[in-house]
Length: 212
Image (cartoon, rainbow, N blue to C red; front, side, top):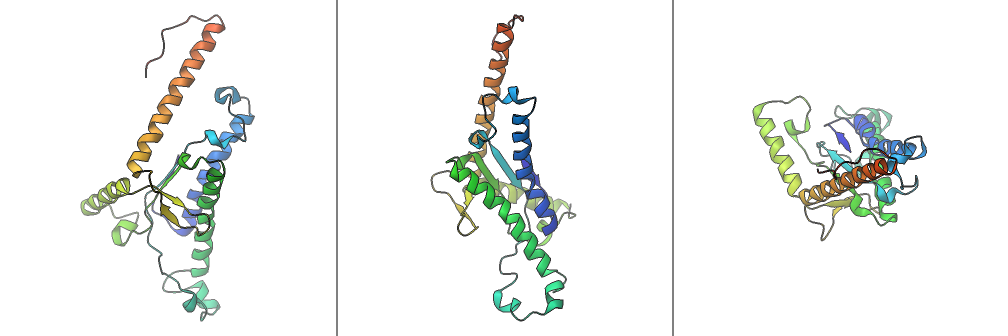
């Protein structure tokens, strides 16, 4: 699972990359000495992955720069413009978006779209988009934003445009989270039962079925 705080573009690139880092670590475990725990999953079988990527929001950058504006910039404006560094921001944002697109393409190619859930609000403004506004008023605002995100329809990246689009027939983010929780609970019961069966087969003292 990937969690990320409100952040700068550079931090966004690092945090979103954690999705790919987490998947890589699981694959390494499949190849390593602990692979028995994940048996019978093969290293290349990403269809067994459940990826939950939760963002806690970022400031809106919709319409921040336009092609017409950028076409008139010189070197200095690309480096510093209204307190920002456009060339760095654009580079970092593009790199970050590629992580979502890469994960989206991977799961869609395996027909496992529902196994990758991304929840994020990229339209925050004012105090809600900062990391140091811990006033009671802003805390209430953030709680409201979180509740609104849960009620929103599940969205998925369009690999052609790079934009997230609502997915018909998949319900809300709250519904999707409940579905992931059920799958994880069932997987845990299966692993515990398999471990208990292996212990019995090896001559260990058998216990009653595990209850969770």
